[in-house]
Image (cartoon, rainbow over all chains, first blue to last red):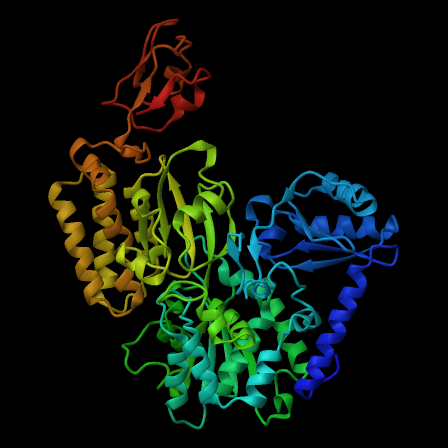
Length: 133
Length: 487
């Protein structure tokens, strides 16, 4: 990454990254891209998330799914590892728990490709700093 | 706000890719550092932190802003910022999760601390057992340096700050800041008497500011949103949120972050989903080996530093272990004490010898050899260890014993007077018994018994002679009819 020399430059970089994110996720037509995040802290990896990440990456590549997959840290749901978060274009993020190979397949085929609900969603019950005025 | 959790320290954890600085930056990352180093005097920035009311999340709850102020006021050519990532409570993983999920927030906060106290060098003291956190920190540091957000002349302000890692070998006592500093210097990880505090004389004898991982993770947000914003969250004396590693007999074991002032009931029953298998809640242990057990009557107590201490426990770093009716509180106290005995560095006698003696007393009680005088001794010895130990480890190690004595005295009495363990955990106090209704007289148990303690005719009820029984459990293993029980 280029060196950031001033606060103004940083603000510009922040805007650019945000625009990229918004462009990717806010459109609900073919242009939009689904974001898949696999929780990969030490504990998630111990629960098998490395394999889930591989499996889902392969599915995305081989089946030509319009999605980007990335690794993230602990989502906090130890009781339901491995956990995967999916954000479809124009929709709220959804977390799936206890993901195995079959469920990974189901998430890709039903939820990401068709937008159909898939069981096993963990209800998000936290606020972020931006939601506290 | 209807959500039960509020994630400030964990705001990015599980949502950004920790190995990409771009994703941290997209959430206003390093903007607080930029604003502080280009637009605020160190004094002004420290005042903001004091006004926010942030207190140390490592356990003791000392006001973070004041700690920075003392380090700023110490005059020296060289000062240091240290991040204490020596997380060691059994069952606690808050700091590891933050470092693995959001390393940049810790780096940014350390740089802000460096600017405020006048340090250009920071160290993260992290245990070698956290290889993934170490790897992600290394990636984060090199990305931040490449972007000019760490290193020389940050934001063209003239302020420079560099961060390196120091590895710990996993001794619990090294979480105590003076022991941590000795370990960093290559000395034995033993605490020393305070004062002098690290803010005056710390790493290599220079003023050093030591903050815990979670404390640091809050700081970029506080500078972004302001002191007023932060101080509105939480209770009168405990501002903000606390991360807990919720474990034990709850349905939803997990990493959670709640506002200070949330009750234990909300944490255990609402967020935690209640006790597993519909069993009855018995106690919750907070503060790890330094904390204590809270019971049913504390369920509606709002969680904050003062309330937990007033009820015989402490905030600690955030381990929260839930127990149900099947847990024996005497054994639990013994478990935590065993940990402290193992981890005592041995420098001072009260902790080295006192905890050992305390542990022996508990052993005796669990084996059915305890007396009423032992219960008295437990309390007296515990108080003496607390009052006379050198550092926080010894001063708090009797807490699990004292708090269980306070809250579960009748369980201790059963062990001592009736020689019974009500929860059915202490093996020495249990006896094998064969249920008449289930026993079919198959003789499997009698054949398995290595000492011939089981007698009975074929197809008739078998009986255990408890005087001979060595409690090996072979009979129970062999029985196919669930006829052998422990009572």
